[in-house]
Amino acid sequence: MPLNRSHNTTHEWEVKVGDQVRAARIAADLDQSGLAALANVSVGALSNLERGKGSSLNTLVAVVRALKRTDWLEALAPAVTVSPIQMLRSKQRRPPARVRSRKNTPKSHDS
Image (cartoon, rainbow, N blue to C red; front, side, top):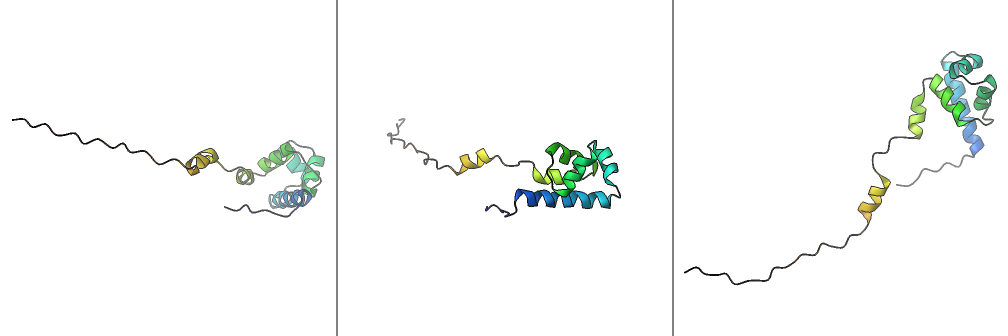
């Protein structure tokens, strides 16, 4: 399965995430100070996040949780259903099973 690679820079991703956070905040009818209080982060940290000016993972998670959008986080780290190690092991070539042949032994006759 080919990887879907984006050509966005880190800064471009920060701006996109910030835009999404801002849009979700506005949709929730919150101002920055209200959301910052709900998330227990500073208004400056929230402002930096929304403007794509750098933010900590802690701030992002706290804000996303306060917005009740943890589905965003789940999309980043979906549960693993198949172990990559198991997949590799199943793809390794295994030698064919050896079949032992039985020597033909004469049948005894009961007379």
